[in-house]
Length: 260
Image 1 (cartoon, helix red, strand yellow):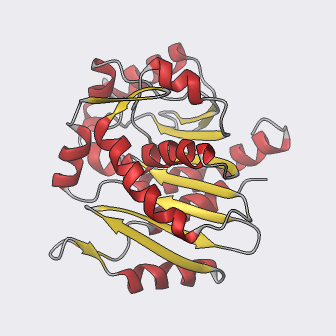
Image 2 (cartoon, one colour; image 1 turned 45 degrees about the vertical axis):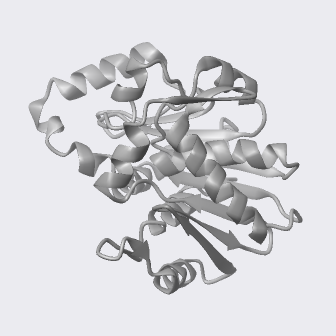
């Protein structure tokens, strides 16, 4: 069974070690934090143009973990660049796609293809994980699954349809988060709808809720002014990690029933 809590912990760690003054990551500090947590494996870190991922090489599989935005400049460049790039499968948000290509071109140097790959990421990192998985599949590598925490809508319907069956994916969404949806929905970007794990306003985990269920839940969330105060904090990976910890029993029940 998939250890989503483990993957959430790995994803939160991707934010560690960043020095906002130098605008770069202390790679030794990040590597130490990851290995202090996992107690196994080796770590390789790729950081380019304010984007970062790390590869945790273990005996049975390799994890590729993508960091989300970690500065206002980085967030504006990647989330307010609303232009689309045309690729074979369809149209994709240009900033996210270019970032994923840049990191993937480098991270493949640390992968020998002998083990399955698990990709994970948060926010911008979640979208780059989903795009990178497609690129790695096209290169003939084995993707076990992708776990995307709060990904934004990032591609047109054609791209989603043409890449949906390439790899297994799990999408974690938070009811109170507007950061990853509002802007992208206006210009008709979409997201994968396979295996959605949605935290509602009662902090309960729902599996593949309908659009109506989500719509009602979000409406009831935002009519409470208190919920509008901490939008950035509520989008954080730490907030998502805490919701996963609170709902481990639901995840275990879904797994026991073979639903995820």
